[in-house]
Image 1: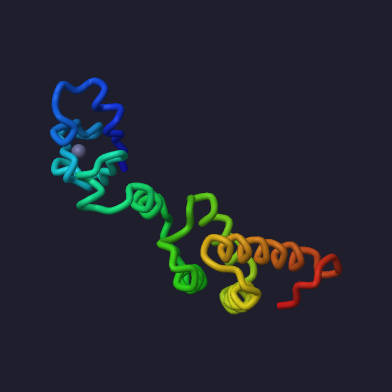
Image 2: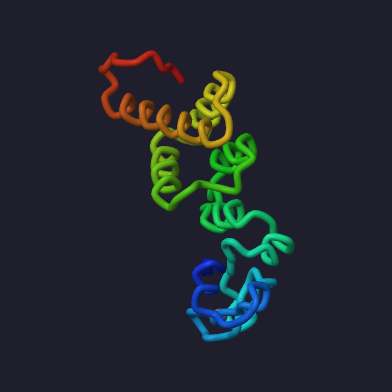
Length: 154
Ligand SMILES: [Zn+2]
């Protein structure tokens, strides 16, 4: 993904705001404000502060969040994302933490934890974080079967 800021480019451009173009950092193709992908290499393009881009493609903030999202790669992850309505995990690190925990506790337990967090009222990003915290507690508990430090029973 490449993000261009119209205000920054306008400062060095000698044309009207709507006419400002730039060039792809990957392949050098010209990028206009109507484009959300490069016509040369297909890389995703987002323009900040461009009314033209926003008219065609909506909020640049939402677009960037979607493009950065890491899609779920297993059944509990897909179940979790369906409940949150989010396109995926916010970072590779978050996805890895989740997937490692799933490897430890298994899908059945993970789905129960997702339901538990949902029923306790967590939603959207809060639900993802609540689930990951609870999964990590379950992993720790599994690693030390004798420990009795928390109340989570799954
Ligand atoms: Zn390109």
